[in-house]
Image (cartoon, rainbow, N blue to C red; front, side, top):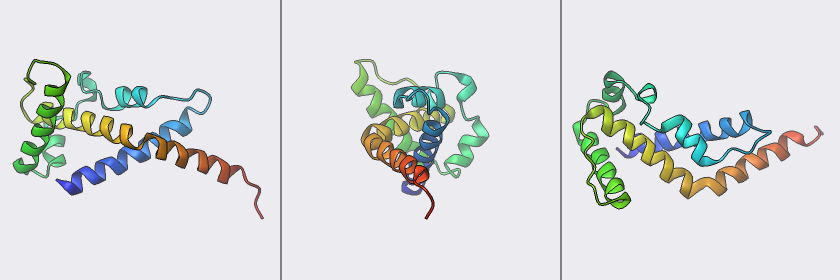
Length: 126
């Protein structure tokens, strides 16, 4: 599970940096990025069943760890328990929650990395 989470967080970081570069004129917010990229309410953004199985390497221990993250997240949101079950709901919801938490925790660092890249690329060549 740790490998999947670390790989995913690295992907989120890289995708967010690309998102920042692609939207230079208007400073995008992390919420827009998360909603555009990972909000699984839109079924068109769901990873399909086969992709979800590949994502967890067909390991249901990983599925249960992901499900626990989802249940914990929704139990803190409101009084209604999370009713999403099944591989597709769990994997896609976990990706959303993980991306949201990662960007909330690392937003300033990623923005600084982005701004440092702008400064470096704007510097004249020696």
